[in-house]
Length: 235
Image 1: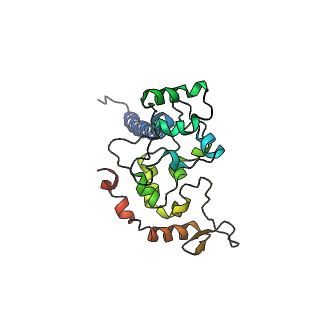
Image 2 (image 1 turned 60 degrees about the horizontal axis):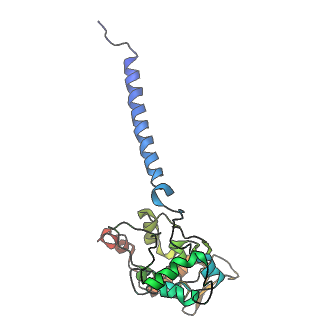
């Protein structure tokens, strides 16, 4: 006696196919979700004790990154400016602005302002600012248009795939060291007239890949195999 109808096999196969599709779809949703600002915090403006504007200070006043981030060329950490750096200017201008009272209080009491970290890497990831700068990686390569940010936010996802894209294709991102802090720097593009050519070591380049390869050699950038090795970033 036949217990199951003839359609049972077809139903079973369809059920298995639906399960596979459901699991695959769920995996795709999870992978897409982890790339969203909900997980990465990219584009999220965090509350700060003082609404500091990079747009005003960098674009408006022309202050160089290194005036505040003093250790960025020599240390793994870019450095958070002490209150004294702020007071150098603000004991002369905007001296009574209400929103700068936390700065004045910090200077009076000697208690540091507690800034909220914007670009945060996991503890198991090693990153060194000075290495990247001395190899010709510009500030806005990772930090984006920070000179146009009224409130600072994390520009890139800072996920592993973001870092690996650069480490696998360093020639696409490098620039001469004297242009690292130039927020208006434009990489050269193929142009027979060479209107946007970039000079390096006495030669003009109007192709980023050619420039990048020249910089890799001059700055002794390690091989792709070396800088994509696990222990380069996970120590």
